[in-house]
Image (cartoon, rainbow, N blue to C red):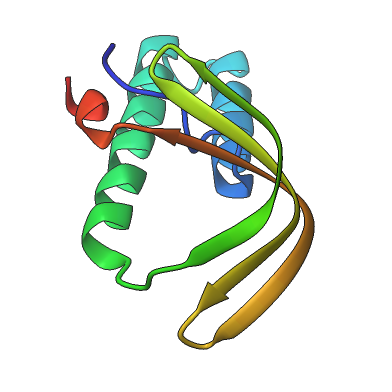
Length: 106
């Protein structure tokens, strides 16, 4: 597997995808180049998170659902609390998707 499409459903990922789709539909951009841009986006996001994010967060909540499929864990928590050095935040429902970062470089 060359890469996961982890960050494409984020706001910035969806905006990038929409822009690339518009460029492909108007003939401004080749579809193969658009795909390469999206793959590089996922790699860049992974690298930035690995090298630039230094804070740690503790998550507690009620585990509603969990799933492991294709080396990807999905957790759905209810009434979750996120705690870090600066404080904490209550969230009603959160979905966490996790995978082994080593699989991203294969």
